[in-house]
Image 1 (tube, one colour):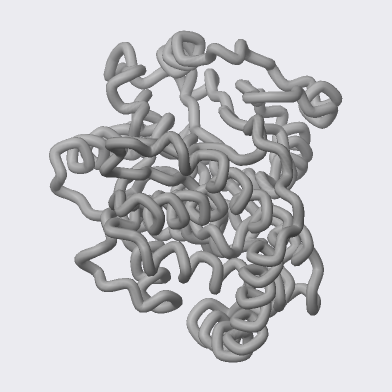
Image 2 (image 1 turned 180 degrees about the vertical axis):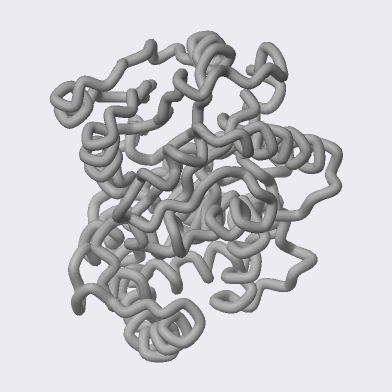
Amino acid sequence: MVEIVDLVNGDVADPPLGFLVCLRALLMLLKALSRGHGLWSLLRRHYGLSPKNAAGGWSVSLRSFVRAQGVAASLLGRLDGVRLVHAHDLFCGVVGAELSKCSGAELVYDAHEVEFHRNRRNSWLRTAFDVVVERSVLDRTRELRVVNAPIAALYEHVHDVPRERIRVVLNDHFVNRCRERSFDVPEPGRLALVYVGAGIRGRQLDRLASEAKRLGVPVHAFFIGELPELAIAAGWVIGPRDYESALVSLVAVHRCVMWCCVDDVCLSYRLALPNKFFQALAVGIPVVAADGSYLADLVRTHDLGFVFDGRDLEKVVRGIQSPDFADKLASVRRFRFGLTAGLLRI
């Protein structure tokens, strides 16, 4: 099997703009222009989306498409005996589709979230271009993998992928790595808001900082990557990057909830279930989800925590201090058991 994970850090130089590469890019552009109106009508009708502008960010997708051609060409001589290609994300999928076409190997395409509408400049042309590129990948794909049922439904709508070719694979690779120490509920005065992940835009960290400061609630953060100035200025408790044992110790003595809020800026953020949600399940704590997200729907349906409306965190803090917090802990454990046993489909 060949697994294609990352084009950004690869050792393949950008290919020269040969005739065939230019022709393929031009064909994708023409298909995007042809399909764009219908695509955006569908996205507006079903998901309330509108493009940010006409063509912003399109050149980024074009360069990624061209680079993918060069990576595919460099790998063609290494495919002897390969029967399966597993490609992660959109432009790795372009590489995988080329390798599948030339070698006859089967292609598994792992879209993870929503590849054509992420936290970036989602212009009319860029989104349409990425959709037609992804459609070309899916035409070669034996199995499409997505992270939950709503995203599977989205790919059925946008790409007409038959449901039997879509496999839902949850990001639940934390469940066997860290567990809560006990079922005891810490005292109401010992509470903490927890964040695990990258310190990047779109995660409502500025709102978390301002509301936590106003209410005098401590924030314990475990950052993956660069430490943001916002966290330092707000006086957050910064944990180690190798965080799992520290997180287990923290939830054993504090009433903790995991901050999972995101801005409603793209379909990926709205529909996907972030890693930190599954990290919270693994250690048995509730979550705080942004109103309007699919995660918020799960929180309401299964009593997995709190929904934040973007304005006032005080209601969440009162819920953490409430005697009912023990019920939410029990709901989280039941939900995790249901996922692990295959009794729930999300």
